[in-house]
Length: 140
Image (cartoon, rainbow, N blue to C red):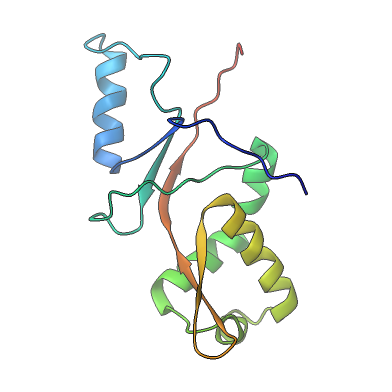
């Protein structure tokens, strides 16, 4: 699979409140959008973390598929229960470990989760983005 690369500066990490204030200022005409400004906003899971989490999808359809209700439930379980391994997560979700690992790798490639080294050969899934906002240029 070809790795899709993103141009620097096309994403921004911030809170939902910041995103809302920015958007309202643009709508009210108080602010103009600079074409060099980020097109994708991401709210980090840890609001104190200001490091940008790069969330990207190969297409809108791929993003919609990866953010299916079943996978959103998976992300909530990871965030709430903080499983120590993929095996533990498989038990919690009643999903086959191989299939779960495939999904987690796709989520990791997209920037939604991180797979940290756990004990032994285990990987601990960690949710990295709380909110993802899409911007679509319908004329572009």
